[in-house]
Structure formats: structure tokens, C-alpha cells
Amino acid sequence: MMKYVDIPPVWLAATLVAAWLQKTHFAYGLSFGPVWADLAGGLLVGAGLVMAALAVYEMRRHRTTVMPHETPDALVTSGIFKRSRNPIYLADSLILTGLILYWDAVLSLPLIPVFVWWIEKHFILAEEKRLRRNFRANYARYEKQTRRWL
Image (cartoon, rainbow, N blue to C red; front, side, top):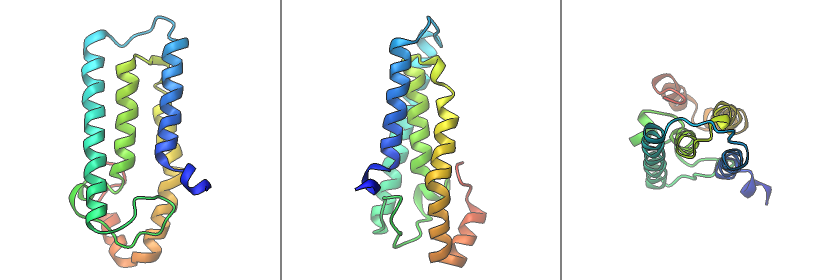
């Protein structure tokens, strides 16, 4: 049961709830500005949703799991995975950043690096270990060619 609760979308949702609560109850009159933050926030959320959809599509095309605690059946290096080894986590970060901007949750900005750090330590390192173990030379080549985030 815990492996279905301890997944990145749950952590993203928890971070978004914290940012929303901050902007709702502890805004202290701070603002990014009405126009540019809404535009940038919307673009980031849109880019994050598209990136996540492309990554899930590519993983499904290769018939491998999107669940972070499971062992993948294939090493996906095509599509969006040519640009980032972790496009779904990058998408989550874009969505978080975009909604913080859109909501004017100025004091929630520190949540972004905390979220990225938590995802890396809690999910990415374990996933990379499984990929190294299962796909040895292929993963070593992929790791050298493609950056973790961007």
C-alpha cells in the first residue's frame, strides 16, 4: 500500500497544497505582479503537462512502468528522454513553479528547490541504481549522453 502512496504525484500535490495555503493565509501582501507572473505561470504549467504526457507516452510505447518503485522492463532513451533522463520529475517541477507564480505564492518559492532535492534523493537516485544494475553498459552510455534534469 505504501508504494502507491509514496509516489511523486502525491509529493507534488502536498507541495501544491502547502503553496496554496501559504498564498491563501499568509500572503502578507506580497506579489510577483499581475500580468507577467500569470503568463509565465501558465506557460510553465502547460509545458510541464505536455512534457509529462510525452514522457508517459514514450514509456508506454516501450511497454515499461512509470511507477518509480518498480523495476523497468526497458531503458527508454528516445523521444523526450533524449533531452532529460527525468522528464516527468522536470515536468512536476515546472508545474510547481508555474502554479506558485500563478497563485502569487511568493513565500512558497523555497518549496521549489526543496521539492527538487526531495525528488532527487528519494526517487531518482534509487531509480538510477536499478537502471545501472539492469541495463549496465546501455545505461552508462545514456548517462553520459543525457543530463539528469536538462
